[in-house]
Image (tube, rainbow, N blue to C red; front, side):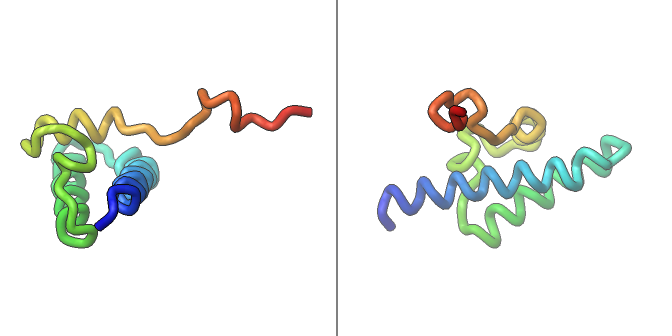
Length: 87
């Protein structure tokens, strides 16, 4: 596969993960459910997208590292001043 296609796939998986976190994870009320969700999300990335979490997020694949990474995951380019329309 071409590098650009893989980078696009990686970017889309990060965006999808971010949306899953905001829609589902942010509403969970206990650590047991959050840990289950992280494991589920990790399995989906690996099974459905055929990517490793290490490749997508750049961290070791142990659950503690993934937990920390998922909590910090944010997606956007609000700091890119070229994307802001001028009047």
